[in-house]
Length: 106
Image 1 (spheres, helix red, strand yellow):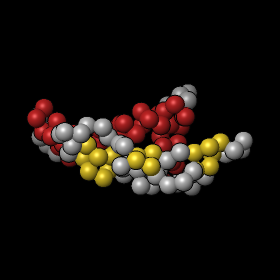
Image 2 (cartoon, rainbow, N blue to C red; image 1 turned 45 degrees about the vertical axis):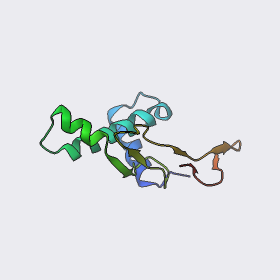
Image 3 (cartoon, rainbow, N blue to C red; image 1 turned 120 degrees about the vertical axis):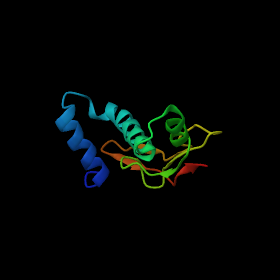
């Protein structure tokens, strides 16, 4: 389903070049986490102080990572540090994964 998705093509190319012996299915979460860290560091600019790093890491709104399903975004605030509260269920039909319903969560 996602073979032609730009984010997944980028992920697979990265894995092939940098971690060809790793299990690609087990690597998607660490890859997404690294992408989020890159975004935080980008927002820090030249100020890599502890205070600014924490400020940027706890003020993320609507970050759509390339490997996340459309509509599933990262939102972190100083008082709510759980990055995502939405999900989309899928069922394996014996051949492929089939997405169920819409995004759930708030």
